[in-house]
Amino acid sequence: MNARPALTQNDYSPVAAPQLGAWSPALSVSVVIPAHGGQDKLDLTLAALATQTYPDHLMEVLVVDDGSEPPIRLPEIRPVNTRVVRVRDGWGISNAVNTGAKAADGEIIQRLDSDMVACREHIEALARWHHETDYLVTIGMKKFVDTPPLTPRQVFQAGHLGELFKLDEAVSSSTEATIAKTDGLRKSRNPYHVCTGPTFALPREVFHAVGGLDPTVARGEDTEFSYRLAMHGVVFVPDMDAQAVHLGLPAQHRDRERAVRAVEPYLAHRIPLRRDLRKDRGRRWLVPYVEIVLDVTDTSESVVREAVAAALDGKLQDVVVTLVGPWSRLNDARRSVLSDPCFELRLIRDLFAHDDRIRLIDEAAPTPAPVPFRYRGPVDVPLHRVTLERMIESVQKDLTGVLIVDLPDGRATRLERTSALGRAVLLADPGAADLDDIIAVTHGVRHESPDRYWPAPKQPEPVTIPAPVTVSAEPPEKTLLRRLKSALRPN
Image (cartoon, rainbow, N blue to C red; front, side, top):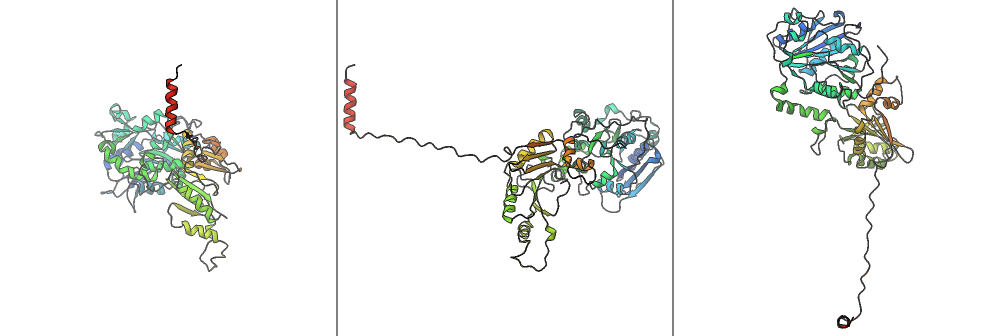
């Protein structure tokens, strides 16, 4: 495997995948197939996998039986190393995929649906990229077809998908248009959007590092998982040679309105970048948009109170505040309350301990994932109401990784993009302290002055006092007589 290249954003152009059929694979692949019934379609899926160009000794197939009645059986035509894994606890696609991944021996996890028929080069096409570097997620292509009367033997003997299916009548996945429009995702702002489940491959270590799929997500589990992968710092690579057909139309085609409604609550709570799903005022969400980190060590309660109040009162309300301090030093042993050396620290803890928008931790994590942004700054420099909103607006224009605002006293505040931090952590040498040099290459680091982010208070408009009106002391009758004489005087 080559050294890890510091790829910029999602531009994987520096990675050159080997040509199909002209290289020697070395990494083992575990194909994980969640299945709940559908034996006939599964038989076709396994028949297609039995003809793969990837070496048999480097590929295993795990069919995860998610409570099928009757239980899944292995057909005659199947890959050499195929086994059934029974789900013992829980249910659903996410739980089944996690079960299979835990039982997998391969260095690469290949996720595949049980109603997919893959071309012969499918596994090879997606696996070849992982031989070049180890922080990629490769995505296969799919088209939707009505299921024709096929036998596993016909699938096994076919040289390519066009012999089995009328591909010119197939329904293309909507993701293919996005891939084409964004130069193969190289220019995509949110490439995780197209990693939608039926076929993708990634290193097993990366799968487990992000915690696998979320079993509590009943719809949209693949998108939510891909979002967490993006926060981990991976690069998404679609491979047009990894073709497959999906037997039957997706749920969105059968009942689009209900399919969209079913997925919305899960994505709204778990993917903060979906701002369109968070328009309800006053709501709290499972994963906030920004984490505000303040180090409160040796800080008075009054300073912390002011900083927290400012953080929670900004125009951007979708936040969580993390107070970093030596909280583990506090215990419940007998003490003098008023002369306690940790008096201020206890006061801060007791003041904020029951507010679910505030977290008390001893040390900030390397990244705030799955929260997409993190703000860090001096606790004695309270946020202005517009600070966060304007900082995010600034970095979103060009997807900058870190925005540093240089304060007049020589200190600085910073807004960090989680996906950039995640990428830097993946690429950094063990124990590396400063990740900004890496982020400068992969996403960019920018310095700015504080004027726009802490605008000066508006000065009141000057009040102009009109000059006093001079009142004549002349009696009205004399004034009238004088004007009359003036009017009758000859010119």
